Amino acid sequence: MLDLKITGGHVVLRGEVLRLDIGVKDGTVVRLEESLADEAAERHYEAAGKHVLPGMIDAHVHFNEPAMGHWEGFATGSAALAAGGCTSYMDMPLNGLPPTVSITALKRKLEAAEGRSRVDYALWGGLVPGNADQLAPLAEAGVIGFKAFMSEPGGEGEDRFQRVDDEALLEGMKRIAKLNRVLALHAEDEAMTVRLARQAAAEGLTGALDYAASRPIAAECEAVRRALLMAERTGCPLHFVHISSAAAVELIQAAKDRGLDVTLETCPHYLTLTEADTVSLGAVAKCAPPLRSAEERDKLWQALADGRIDLIASDHSPSPPELKRADRFFDAWGGIAGAQSTFELMIGEGHLKRGLSLPFLCSLLSLRPAERFGLHPRKGEIALQADADFAIIDLNRPYKLSAEHLKQRHAYSPYTGRIMGCRVSATVLRGNFVYLYNSDDARTDDYSAASADDSMKGDGKWLRYRY
Image (cartoon, rainbow, N blue to C red; front, side, top):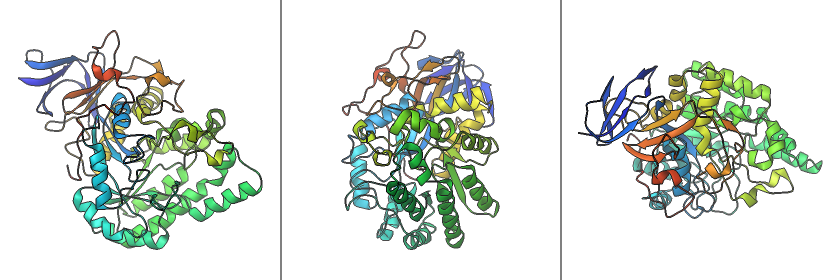
């Protein structure tokens, strides 16, 4: 007997969409057939009229534990991801105290996550000044890669995550190249952004567009250029996070063409919002790098359609709402809260609006993150013997996103009030429902009413590298 069968849906596979039934046993896909109507199963989900996609793998979130869970925690952040069709995520090493830059800190983060995450999770380690000797132990313990900042990440105190200068970055790359891991980089030139911010302050320029002007595309490209030179010298695999400009995409593509092992991600906010939104929405739309022009947004869509962008991640980086309120836009916390909306935004904007195929979009949202960061073949696609991780999507159910829909710690988002072109009906993790949309045509489930509550338990497990 099967544990679960999903029937009647259009199943998104690698390169094609087929009307198939799915059979699940012991958390894995064991049957993919035209009909399982006569097959017994403990649980049956009828997906007629819907699409069954591989669960999203979000390679870039900030859940801020330990000690900073009042910003966002494993329980609340993972509930938001589950409601958005995400079945695995990769948590960044900063914002929690201590940041994940040592074995001791890694153990504390694992303790904070144990039994709390609704979906599966992997962890990034950090590269900071002075922790080069911790890189090998962290890799051996199972982190999926390392993250470094080329500009100041913000925060206060000696224990905060700190940026690396070129000397520390080069040494880190030499070591990571020997560890079979990827170095993820926040690429903005520190000297340029600091100088421009000081100049803006001296001239009394404090608004949203002034902030954007202080972190120009040139700062992103200069940092990318330097990092690529170091990667060419050291052989270190690189992954550039939250790339915001077509010019940076072109620099990275040229490096790929030269044979460098390098990938890049962009985020839904760079594809769906513009610098004008920072004016109309305020600091809820503040991020670094900042939102760009409508023309730049359209160039990113073209780069994505041309296959020059490797994956899409949310960069979910929320804060308490009061930190978004400041007289000077420069002083407000910079980070987009968008974990729950990534899948629906990209399917709506990419497939329904622009005609990009579902298999192509799923490669950006699921397959390539799994391949790049050591989770494939168990994760990333619907295939026999893969984990039974699914997002069941109704492409014919648009809705207006409201704060009441959001499961994250603080119910604000730059996307509230937006018409989402589709809706997640259910999310399945290793054969178990972790989210069911409560509507007239979908069965209710206690997970559908999940709220931002630290008492929530979860069956998500830690995914070590090469899970």
